[in-house]
Structure formats: structure tokens, C-alpha cells
Image (cartoon, rainbow, N blue to C red; front, side, top):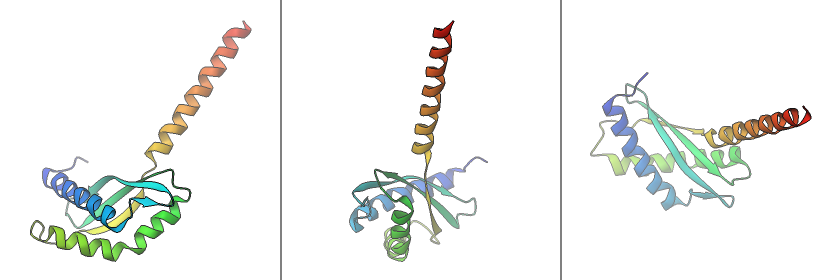
Length: 125
């Protein structure tokens, strides 16, 4: 389903402010790796925001996600104070791991393996 204009606007504001909050709290660097907010998706009723986090060179992504979820109250408090004049109610934040980069790497490896197999087969003939 397509996102509405208001959903996109709310998501953009939340994403921008969350980036600032993550930097302020030091959550953009966890376990020697980098954490970034890949995207924010808002439900049509604007009551829930799904925050997709991208982890780069983080050893244990589940532990890093737990670290962020442990600070969820503090994050929401700072976010609420930063957007209080823009929203009537603050959406409930849910955090998810964005595995798009891992998926892309996996697909590239599969295509590379297929290409190498094709070379071997055509070289045998």
C-alpha cells in the first residue's frame, strides 16, 4: 500500500530527529561499528512508527539492537520534546534490523557463483 503524504512527512521528521538523538546519545557507534537509521515507516493512523536500523561492521547486531531498545524510553523522551509542536500524539516506536545490505551481499555472491559455474561449463566444451 502506498504511503500518504502525511505519513511521509511524519516519517521524515522522525528520521531526522532520531539521527540527531542517536548522535547525541552515542548510539550511532556501537561495538566499534556504525548504526544508522535506514528508514522509518508510519502506519496510516500515525500511531506506530517502525524504525529500521542498518548496522555496518557491528559484530552482534541483536545485542546492538537490544542496547538501543534498552534506551528506548530515553530516545522517545528526547524525540517527544523535539517534535512536540509538530505532532498531536507521539507514535509508538518499534525498532527492527534492516538486513537489506546483507541481502544484497548474498545475492551478489550467488550471481558471482553462477557466473563462475557458467565459465567452467562453457570452458569444458
